[in-house]
Image (cartoon, rainbow, N blue to C red; front, side, top):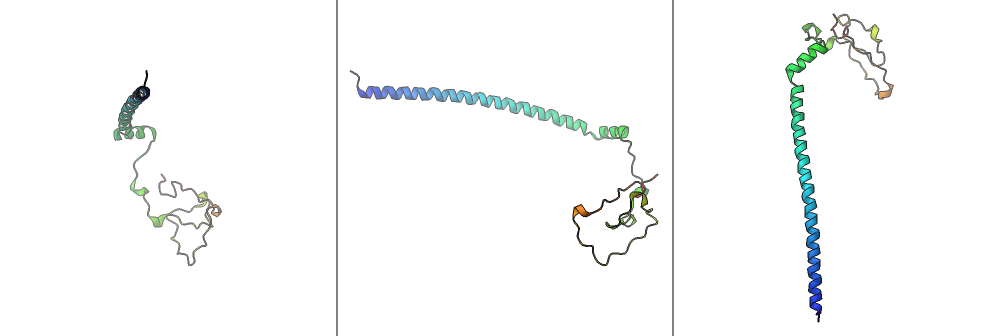
Length: 141
């Protein structure tokens, strides 16, 4: 005759066996995921190394200088291209001249400081400032 304790122990053994089976399957799934993540990290690290090597090659100063000479046509700055702040044209915001009306730098006197500051304006109400040209910056040929 089967005692109740035998049934309880049998149910307990079956529960523990089922639990161990589920835990073993979960551990196997987690190990696969961990291996997949390690492989992805390894691939990403290798990609980073390749990208750093390409970056070093692309930013080589001698290569950049060669490309700039070949494609940009830039020349070194000459000393006569530098101007002081007092030589720059002064135009109040309200009466900015058109770009073709800007006087030469050497002929323009330095203006006297304003007695009363202008009231603040919003950005939208300011007129467009003239764009500097090579002639106004002292870089004309």
